[in-house]
Length: 114
Image 1: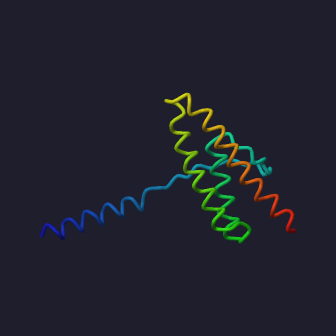
Image 2: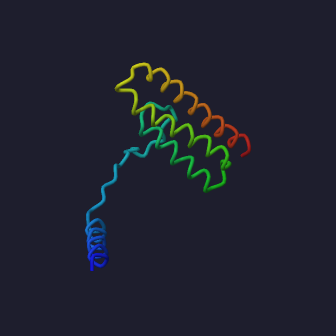
Image 3: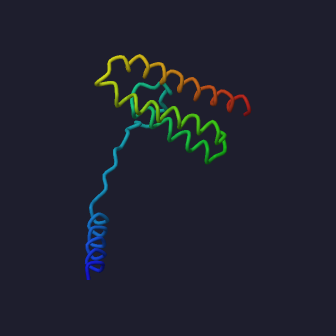
């Protein structure tokens, strides 16, 4: 009997979770193309979404996308450290600059192929 009660509770929990409204954070772009300078988490997320689109459109190799993902993961961890570790600010800025360079290099290569 306990197993069926467990399934009933789990099913009820799933139904409740499914009925709760989901919220998404909207990053306002105001219809303008933004420069790829990276200053915030939103900028890094925007770059990652653009990279995912580029992979789907076969404008960037999976290896390059993996390298960008690896750097984004490291940067997000640094963003979390910054409030408690002032030394991390300089490291974060360097990582952001390196990621921006990697991304722009890829864009320039794509532009030269066109």
